[in-house]
Amino acid sequence: MIAHGGRPCSIGHIGERALDTPARIFYKYEGTSQAGSHKPNTAVAQAYYIKKEGFKRVTTETGAGQWGSALSMGCAFFGLELKVYMVKISYSQKPYRRVLMETWGARCVPSPSRDTEVGCRILANNPDSTGSLGIAISEAIEDVFAHDDTKYSIGSVANHVLLHQTIIGEETRKQMEMADAYPDIIVGNVGGGSNFAGQFLPWIRDKIGGKRPNMRVICVEPAASPSLTKGPYAWDYGDEAGLAPILKTYTLGHSFVPPPVHAGGLRYHGMAPIICYLHKLGFVEAKAVHQIATFEAGVRFARAEGIIPAPESCHNIKVAIDEALRCKEAGESRTILIALSGHGHFDLAAYDEYLSGRLQDYEYPEELVKKALADLPRMD
Ligand SMILES: Cc1ncc(COP(=O)(O)O)c(C=O)c1O
Image (cartoon, rainbow, N blue to C red; front, side, top):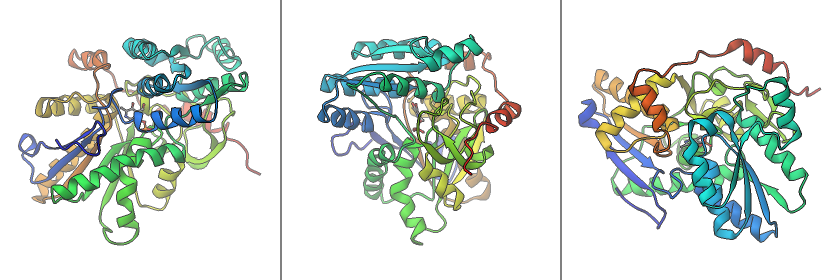
């Protein structure tokens, strides 16, 4: 492990023995941050600027609860009040994330909630709605419209969030230099895209500029919510109710509610426009994987490295293992870098489902996506 610049994170070099592969495997771990993931990199900065602009209160959405926790901590540092709309399925799957937020002084409600018109409308149509990040964002924005002293803060997708997260890749470059290594393959999970873009953007300039034309950047998403691999590249809203600006994105439709996979941070209909554009140009690849296979990979990683990865991070571990085994078959040595976005200490119920054989996969909900895509904004 090499700590760098005082930021609580680490880089590790693993697993070749466990996989019996000639590949060299590195992982950059964000789970040593106070909130357990990469999210404080932007949460603390956003809370600082919101305070500086004179606002007293903040609203936000959270999927798995990692972002809500990080922003709760950031707001505690600067004396800001925070209300978090947490996707309902995650609110029940990960109750201790709520307690973490409350410990840092935030208020956390399940979304859809009865506190906003958007939430009431969705509950009237479907009282059993499990919620989505798109719905939670709409609720947080509606709340801001109703309060002059309040600012909305977003945890992913937007360019400024990706920019804050590039500390991850900048730091990894320095750390790998110390190990005299350079990645041939970089693998990360993408929900809104912030942790992985934060890792790969500082490298991809070498690919775009022609210094490393063969470097591969692989974005991994859930097969149940596959925006990059199945969605059209189109203009769409960032939230369910259309209160947020439209973005050019690979999308499953802003009204799509993804199946309740445990990787709550990856249950989003769209993707960061910067990643989408790079994918469109062919600089980054995308793969979709089912959740049982991701937990299988996560458990394998935990037994080799000791770290219990977040369900989101298990996605890219699965693909990294596949690539390492491909190296073994081909007898090739490649350097693989895994963007390990967080720990899974609050996700043990999900691990329990996996270990006891109760975890299920969800097929790509094609009909629901088709329906949601009919709601894309018209651009003519
Ligand atoms: C641990 C972890 N990894 C990944 C993500 C996905 O978000 P992003 O794509 O913005 O990094 C989340 C989001 O909540 C997360 O908590």
